[in-house]
Length: 111
Length: 115
Image (cartoon, rainbow over all chains, first blue to last red; front, side, top):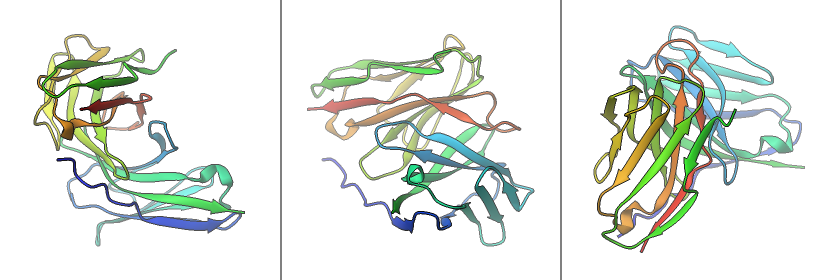
């Protein structure tokens, strides 16, 4: 039969506040770590990536932090806006191009 | 540019039927991927390709086959559909998966129901 779907963890954020989304990864050999945003009914969209030899990278309103010691990745969104409401996925690239996704987090922005 | 185009967008199959999902990209990307996404879950990698004529297994390859005869196309086949394959299927492509510029572009998805 069909498997039962799991509910995604939800992060509720007030508009204007900063958001922090966390992700744990398992593969120490990954070359790049990436964050994607998926809005309802659409395919994922690239947000930002970070190479495995870096620990921080900033983009427009977003910052990704990588802690290889504890295999932890986080995405910080500054001044969260209603348009930031979506599911956010972390992903990693290893084994010559294998792009594998981790668990997602539902972000809900409240007025 | 169309980007990544998936056909069909919707399909209902009977158990045991076969079908092929087509993914086409016009960005001259080397890498292409097929994922499935079940309700409330993340994307699971089915198969991927690092270039024309090459394919590799992902996390959940059983029950699926793929072909990359042309660089711009990546086909996903279901030989004998099962209800467990009811899902939304996403195709993606990227310039190169390992080195710089890791951005993958996704299609809009194919919603497949197997009854």
